[in-house]
Image: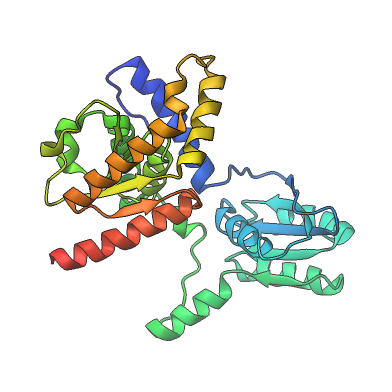
Length: 315
């Protein structure tokens, strides 16, 4: 975790929470030892998935999960080996691969280790795939250049990495209407009623390198519009279905033992909040995204698309 100075203990605890959230959204926590995870997709069919990488395994893991998501009725047992950079390490895992069978997905740069792994799979008739090869081959053709075998090159601590850390710190300090006096330094400002996914979307976008602030619309409190009209900041309005908001807020009140404040979850009052929010967004000419049936990733992708078009129109 990067070392960041905080103005208060409250900020520090909020940072810990949001940093953990960002890790859940963007990466899997992996080590150099064997781990096994069970994805409960359906009780009908078991399949062993072996994920082998010479780096953190994040890329292999994410691509494998994306592929698995295309198949209903699969019960996947995942075996993950990371930092596999020696023949001795590969030798230590081949017995489990042979014992469980299934399929092997790998991302290995060293040609000798790759060749040995493929021989192991061929010997035991286990399907295998170097998951980055199709993309790398296509890029190599387009660029007219050969590849360079750099282990973990996508994870190096370069300028992009530190930009993401800076964006994450910015999102933490500008969460929930904080530090609005410096919101002009943001790339994107998210505005919406309570529980419209502003914070997790901000953190996800921060991990993509965007400086994002968010502001909650509260009944009876006028938003600081003069701080939201900077021409260099894209403002996006987020809304959610009233019934969905009501249920989310009701659950939140129950978890906080605050059932007495039921106006917060009253669907008629929520409808009023949403109508006022939509009117504000339209009056200001801000794009509106309904997050009701969208994942955080889908909402973020739509915001990035809007942002890219907005930047193009400005230039």
